[in-house]
Structure formats: structure tokens, C-alpha cells
Amino acid sequence: MPSLLKVTNLCKSFKQPSGLFTTREKVAYGPVSFTIEAGQTLAIVGESGSGKSALVRTIAGVLKATSGEIFIKGQPLESLSSQQRCLSLRMIFQDPSSSLNPKMTVGKILNAPLELNTNKNAKERSQKIIETLKLVGLLPDYLAFFPNMLSSVQKHQVAIARAMILDPDIILADEILTTLDISLRFKIVNLLLNIQKIKGTSYIFVAHNMHLVKHMSDQIMVLHQGKIIEKGSTETICEDPQQEQTKYLLLTHQPDYRK
Image 1 (cartoon, helix red, strand yellow):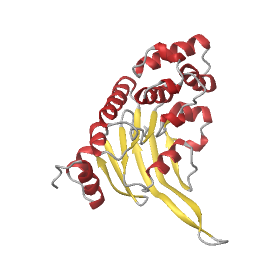
Image 2 (image 1 turned 60 degrees about the horizontal axis):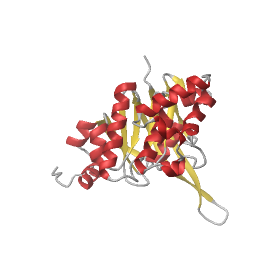
Image 3 (image 1 turned 180 degrees about the vertical axis):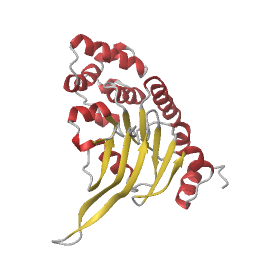
Image 4 (image 1 turned 90 degrees about the vertical axis):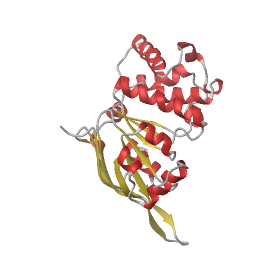
């Protein structure tokens, strides 16, 4: 049986000006290869500029890979229709304040993916929206709210609800906790873990904070200058890191780390 997600030799480079009439290739990441199974969480960590966000945006289809392949349940991602991709992969962006349309109510924000990607009628869509709000810990009263009426954590809950509304196999989360203080970060992480327990959703989670990574991930992949320098189970990486960059990341977020 094929893996839920298989990434093989994925690379991404950009052209950058290097002179008045010349350009050069800048490698964002690659080659990157990994697999993820149903119900697993893969954390991608590394310093700023290591290629983490570019990688998840490529998997989400926001960026086009320079080379390499992505497979969903054994099917090449490029062979899937836009609707099939949305039903398989959904992304939560870093800042919900900028990713939620300020002119749409929560109800309309959650209804849009259902209208575009399913054949549900209005009653079925309404039921699914209320069910999804409940899943993320919000009451139906919030359907009439606009994003500017929500607190920071409520915006995150709506962003998660928008991602979950189609019951995707995989959620890609690109540093979604950076705008929250530490107590609210753990609230959102625990919400994601509860959703995973209920729905069996897989996550690819980009983060800096190793405390959060250790709390929610099954596997860790460490990127440095676009290359995978270490990957393995969360327990192995955290207890016995092999690379200096990994040790540095752990030391930065674990003051009592002694290894």
C-alpha cells in the first residue's frame, strides 16, 4: 500500500538578479525526500531561510517545484484536479489576520470551499459548517462574525476550521503559532492534536519552537541551507541529535539542555 504522501528528490530554485543583465539560480531547498503516513505529524525545523516555508508551499501547490515528484496515495500530485488536491491537502497560513477575507463573515469563509469543491446542497453545507465549528471549539454564533470581531486565537480556530471543512488527508501548517503567546500556542497545538485523534488527519508542521515540536510531532526533519541534515523519530532527534545545527535548535529552546 503506498504512503499517504511521498516526496522524492524535490528541489526548488529561484532566479535572482546578479548584475545589470544577468541572473543566477538560488536554491531554496533540495533535494528533499520523505514519506508520511495517515495520522502522523512531521515537523520541519531549521533556521530562517533554510527552505521550510518554500517546501510546504510547494507541496501545497502554491509554488511549482523545479524538479522532483510528489505523490498522494501513490498518484502524482500534478495529475490531480484542483478539487482533488483540495480534498487531499489543505494549508493553514502563518497569519490568519491576513489570510481571512475581512469582508466575509465566518459563515461565508467556511461555505466557500464547500461550494467550490463539493456537491453538498445548502442544508448539507450548513450542517457541515456547524459541525466543523464545533470541532475547533467555536459556537454557531460566530457564523455571523467578521474576522476583525475575533480574538487572535479565534482567528486561528477559524483558519483551522477552513482547512478542516473538506476533511483533508493532510494539513500543512506554516509557522501558524508565531503570532500567539506561549499559553495560546499550546491551546492551538492541543486543538490540532484533538482533531488528529478524532479525524486521523496528518500534519506537516513548520515551526521554530522545539518544545511545541516535541509535544506534537512523530517525526522531525531538520533543514539547513535547503538540505536535510537530519531526520527521524521525534524521540531520537530530541534525545540524541547528531548534527550541530540540531543541537543548536534544541539548545535555543531548551535552556536546561546539556547534550
